[in-house]
Structures are given as C-alpha cells and as structure tokens.
Image (tube, rainbow, N blue to C red; front, side, top):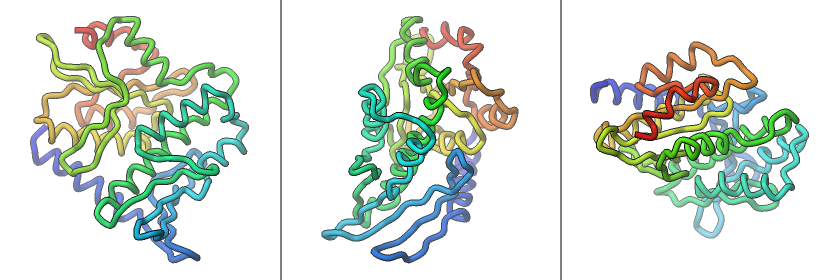
Length: 255
C-alpha cells in the first residue's frame, strides 16, 4: 500500500467517526453518543463531567451491568482478573461498576478513544455467558503461540502516527527470516469490530515505517466468518487467520 492509501484509510475512519458522533448536555455534564455498537446494536455512550479541573469520562456503569443482566458471572477470580487486565491495557479503571478514565483538555480525544475501546473489549466477554465456551479466545491464541514456540510480548501499547496509542495483543519481534509481526485475537469478528483495528494497524504501520506483518485470528467456533470481514482485512494487508485453520500460520509466526 502507498502512503496515499494509508492516508485515505485514516481520512475515511475519521470521517466515519465524526459523522457518527453526537453530543447532548445532560445534568452534570455531557452525553456523547458514538458510532460504535454493542452486541445489541445499540450505540455506545460516554458521559463526561468536569471535576477538580479535570474531565472525568464514564460509561455510567452500562458495560458491566449489561453483562451481568445477560447472565455472565463476573465475580469469579479469573474473570475479575480478565476484566482488570483488559481495563489496564487501555488505562481505564473501574469504580462501583463504572468504567472510568480521566483526561485533560489536551488528552480528551485520546482518552475518550481508550474508554470506548475498553467498552468494546469488555462487551466482547458476553461469549462467556454461553456454557459451551470454557476459555477466553485470547487465552486460546496465547496457548497456540506457546505450543509452537512463538516468541512474543503480549498486550503491548504502541503509538501510531496520529498520536493515539493502540493495544497490540501479541507482538512477535523481527527475525532474520521475518519482519516484525502483530497478532490480534478477535473473538467476535464483524465489520464493525475490525474497522477500529484496521485504523490502528495502519496508524502504527505508518509510525514504524510499514515493515510489519499483521495477523488477525478470527474465532469461527460458534459462527461463520462473513466474507465482508475477510475482504476488509485483506484490503489492508492483514492476514485473516481463521481459527479452524490456525495450524497454517504456525511456521511463519515461529520463524
């Protein structure tokens, strides 16, 4: 891809984001409606209020409450740890069931982006409410990498050309045979869920000179991967590594 192609992706993403945002004044602050959807196809909302010279951003308790209402037990040690790991990766904390992050006027855009990413990631845990699912997809991908002796660092924050930080699930370092590789575990792959990931990948590629191979492991155990998801990934040079075909990628990741 050329630099113009990468810039086109950034412009398209920012344009889509801007056109899907709206804000209303509510008691005590502002309600921001984003174009990102949860599993009910409802738009995710962020609430902002000024406190002690800072801006406090919150999901108003929606994300965790919705998971509990849907039958997901978040009170087991393993799942509490998993939620905390996800939140820490985005610099988000929880308090009384709310997901929270503080921002200054200078970091407001970046911190709002981080909170929305955290809400999407935690919302994806709904799959655990299904009894047939025993482990997180992230853990399955990690076990696969370990099984094939792939060297990696997990949950790495990388800055992109835009200045946003992006969370990479697994970073496989450069070797004599292969360039640096990013591996992402996408548990519920839809066009909606891969669009922010594509923005992040290309944003980081530009900042790092473009010499990075990218893999998106797609969980197809309980769903068929739609063609539009594969096409979107391939259009931006991301390998759609369908989980049922994961062995095909072991050698090149371990190289």
